[in-house]
Length: 339
Ligand code: SF4
Ligand code: MG
Image 1 (cartoon, rainbow, N blue to C red):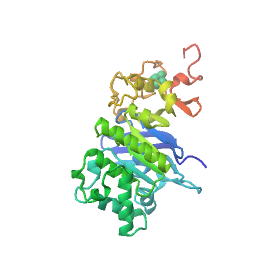
Image 2 (cartoon, rainbow, N blue to C red):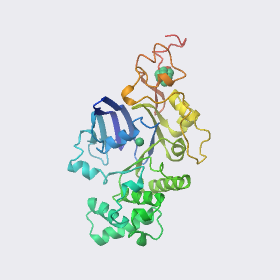
Image 3 (cartoon, protein in one colour):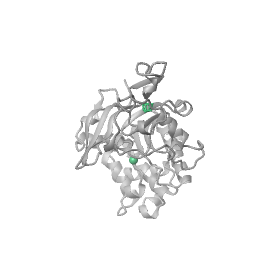
């Protein structure tokens, strides 16, 4: 049976003139049916590239170089999306049909040249065998479902006539056009004001509860994670450093990076924009990754001679939980703490 989406050892690299950037470096995570999995981390940690890898949307000069992305929409054998040609007919059918994506900049994602309605109708007809009139009715219904008032009138609106929040609702309507089994949302509320952000999060939660779709939700905002996640995947410099259920991660974080992230949030659930700026030092560029544990230059718990030399193992730290840290590896750090 297996989870709806299972990413196993994904590696995505960018081959630039300055060198190879290991943007995603052996990421494994899975999205169970009907669940919301949040991928959280600072900018540049590879969370967006992970999401884009799923849909074959990695920009040049990037390429998936390893791992599998197993997609199991039904009972049959899984499809390995990492092995599909991004331009193949199969990937086109999956993208927007079975798996949809919502991005950070709703204004930029909508065409200013066409009405909201025509873009929605086009998205519907791309994947569903509906005539104009039926597609129109479905479009109006989708606008209503995403909480747009007077949806019939809004069909004729252009994106520049709508607020950022309304544009994001339209993008969500387009993403839902074909009842996807998985919605990937990459920082969908980051460009919006705090009130609008909360409304969009509520909307996504409601839509998910109604439809039973799964969500892979990318964010740097722990307040959003607390609101929406069932499971959390914490990324740092292209790797998953910790994962687990949302309550466990918030109440008993294991990895020093997760602890630092949570320590940098003054109040949970306060509804304000949370910033992750108080961790000592800065994130190195992915092309300049430190040897050993990538977090060691910023880690207060780093073990000299160990953390700066060898890759920490991914250690089980509870049911459904792992942390990539030598502190939990009994073989590496004896009880005495002396290596
Ligand atoms: Fe810190 Fe070492 Fe754990 Fe990395 S492996 S998080 S440096 S203690
Ligand atoms: Mg991003």
